[in-house]
Amino acid sequence: MSELPGGYVNAVVRIGDTVRRTRAPAFVHDLLRFLEGWPGAPRYLGDDEQGREILSYLDGQVPWQRPVPAFVQATVLAVARLVREFHDLTAGSALAGDDEVVCHNDLSPKNTVYRGGRPVAFIDWDIAAPGQRIHDVAHVCWQYVDLGPGVADPAGAARLVRAVADGYGLADRSELVDTILWWQDRCWRGIEAAAEAGMPAMVRLRELGAAREVREAYEWTATHRELFDVALSVTPDACH
Image 1 (tube, rainbow, N blue to C red):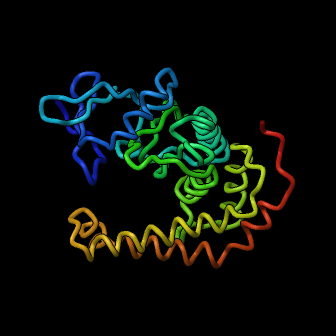
Image 2: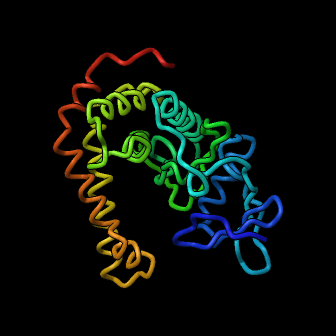
């Protein structure tokens, strides 16, 4: 048995070819069963004697373990196409209900498995829920392009955001920047509120400066939104 890196909120351990972790909501287990046969997600294999869920182990590189792959255009295109695959699988399903698709809602490099530098699967589906396609696309833009004050080339970041939209095949991009800002604002406020309520993991995150960093990312994105709007206004490439 070995404890896996990451798992900041919940401890995650590997036993053989399985991963054991705190049990996710029943909806997530239904989703993972639905996605069986698609290589982009782990399989749900039941629960162990300690009440932890058992998931199949996905071999590859997760950025918690090694340096994050360079997020060049080819990488964000591949991530966006992988997101499109699972969205299309869930579109029109009972799990999506009246919404467009089921969204992962926490897409980021640390929740992505890479092989040979190429994204092949997503992990940590705990907050997956019915939603709109643009929600996950916007989260990808924020997290994989790492939008915030640390960006040295804002124009280059705008081109990568455009690449995400192209790779996904997002037809209507008019609300994409607003949705990125919605995620960032929602995130830092959520950390603050949960920390104030005494949630230990969120208290630790706030102490580490997470709420401040996300708030700064929100302010940076708002300041540079014209760059993103211009990049996204160009007629989409025929990627799909």
